[in-house]
Image (cartoon, rainbow, N blue to C red; front, side, top):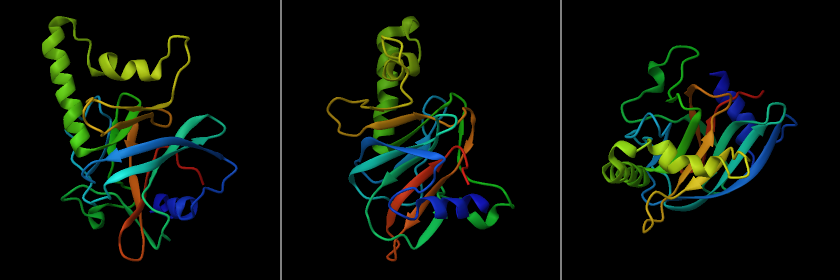
Length: 211
């Protein structure tokens, strides 16, 4: 699993040391239950959560871009500053790493060119918002991207954002961190760094492997 070894080299420290990568502090994601979902929100409205239970609260999100292309290579959520002693590929319930053939990964499909991190409870809020908009607009409903996501990525003056935080429910603190996925469509894995007590320290989704 070369991807896992590469993740260890890049992300075990508290900062990334690579001249090929530029890092940005995006903001904080709120996890209300610690049940984390990673998916393309436009094609997988009910993605199962990762089998690992993460902390509850507000956590820093870092975006790592490939300098040459300016495309997002990795997205990272940091839960603590504890030393990482082990890395594992993130799985869903029922998935077993030992079942994978050489070179295979568990991950999620992207068809829209956009992925996201969010709490399972926030995913429920997003789905509820989509149903509300559909019932209110009927035939005029343009889809959840046009109705909700689009304005956060395409600004009036023509600038394009590569990532954004969105809140699908006003009275719920949970937010969606949505972002462009590497060069676009694909199937992408995530990796979790654990401390000596098997607590999650960080989770990283990979879209472009940078050695």
